[in-house]
Image (cartoon, rainbow, N blue to C red; front, side):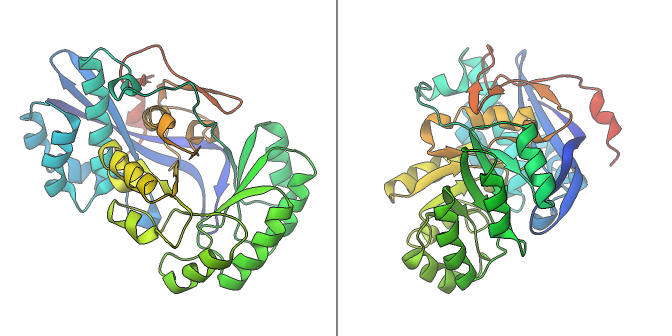
Length: 346
């Protein structure tokens, strides 16, 4: 296979703020794999929390260029199995390669990716749209400028309940909240009562991943479902979340791609947990891949391209929460300008 790397740095529509940090730009890396006249695209994101930078991602992939370019793709699962020992310390890089392999494989089969898996897309869940932390006035403004059926509200401030109370005055949409590890046990239990009264559907990762004892108490006493994010990174974490969370949020970038995500979905469902996939602010390349998992999911947060002021690719479209697939084989993603990536300097 031929390997090509495309680093991008894309602007957000608004400064994107969560409990830990704010940013105006999202660095991303798109991987292209080519074999016998067909090509596949995959994507991964930089993330300071997980100490992943675009230079590190590129260097770790480049280290195995010879192996990749001498590899003949037979199935994505086998490719992931062969790449895992080489990139087990960098799931973000493995994710981009795995998505590209699935895209390429589906094109070889002359099918859309969900067709490869025999899935029915007629009852797909709707995606939410994220409102990042800001002043209450600005959060209301963001909500009003983007009417949507489901909002994911980032919290982790001293005004969390006041934020939701004010936003609720302006819409009857479904609310989900994500505290990104910012709360403690008592705060979580107390906030959940108020949030339930305000029509919130669930709380995502209210507490630090290391606080398992506290999370157990929350799970036993909380009045809203709690969904794991930072507590569920890779496959081994699914079993650790059972009995501590009501569901898990799988992010392809963190777990190593589609191949392990499929196994995580199956394990979570066997355990009776709800399943969600989330966004690391990927462009349409990574988001188009997530779209093909929709028939397997209870919830989805795939609003990355909606939060960005610019995009790297064409692919799936989003219309009032509904996903519209591109009329192409594979994931449906195509780079808009392959030379645009040169604007990112590594």
